[in-house]
Amino acid sequence: MNIQQLLFDLCAANGVSGCESELFDLIQSSLDQYAEVTADANGNVYAVLGNPSGDKTILLDAHLDRIGLIVTDIDQNGFVKVDKCGGMDSRVLQNARLAAQDGITGTVCCLPPHLSDGSEDKATPINKVWVDFGMNAEQVREHVKIGDTLTFVSKPRMLMNNIITSPALDNRCSVAALIRCAEMLHGSEVRYKVVLLFSAQEETYGTGAATGAYRVNADEAIVVDVSFASQPDVSGQYGKIKLDGGPMIGIAPGLDKGMTNCLTALCKDKGIPYQLEPMGGRTGTNADRIAITRSGVKTAMVSVPQRYMHTAVEAVAIDDIERTAGLLAAYIQNGGVQDA
Picture 1 (cartoon, rainbow, N blue to C red):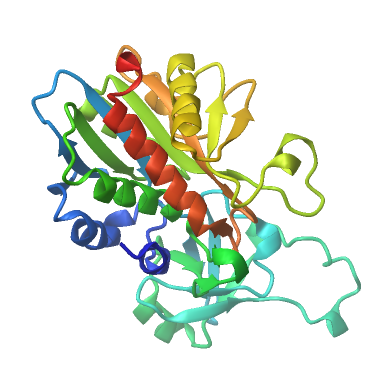
Picture 2: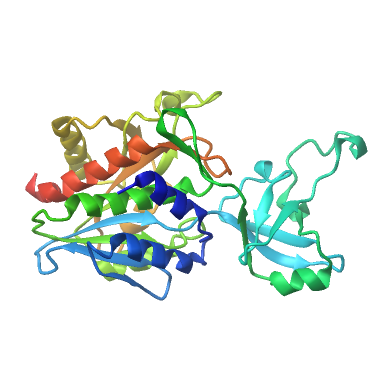
């Protein structure tokens, strides 16, 4: 499997929260030789591996959706008003290029410095953000509708040292890790039922994880997401997290300690570099939803280190994705925590 090409394809897809359906064909084609792929009413995508009749079910979750903007108005001059759809950072919208769902592109309106008195130097609040598609109102309405979503226009690119930069790596890099894990498991004996859940709407409400986990009714779950790697001006525990330093294993009150210990032990046994991410409360990921599904699910969290989260230049190391996939495959082959 060419992870770089898979990432390029995944990151090129739209799939803002609530509009993830266009990813189905790509995931299906990537997994069709390993599992049957299905979807549900909320836009979740499922792939079942291993022994469907096994006496235990292990769930691996990675959310499909990406942050974006939602169209709220089109004025008489053709300028498009937007609001956040997910955790969009207003600071990165100044001068950004955006794509509508049918592929046409526009640019966020901004005031030239020559016409500014300096009061506009701060990030423009979202209620003052407009997008210019270079067309009049009638033309714009042929392409853009109220409720449509917009995404960053930016092609994935490779930096030095096997690092990729692109929008939507949160969380398409984890989607790639799950697909790669399925490839690693192919042909090996897996005693238990394993469900890959590519969940919808994590960036807005976590609907996909809540309904998907309820449907799967797993005994154990590992949520795979991204978390913060060191970069300039970052201090504290995240100042020590290295890009290309291996997956981050979460430690939090709502995460199962036995699973966490099993994951760290497997890293040591398999020679997989890893990093720890202690949190004193909620994780801010689908793990918070899945852990309290039905009567409770043993849940762990593994994160891919990432720089510049929720921007058009998110950056991850491809080797960290490979290591994350290897750790997940080792956990499945080990039989989960109860057989450790």
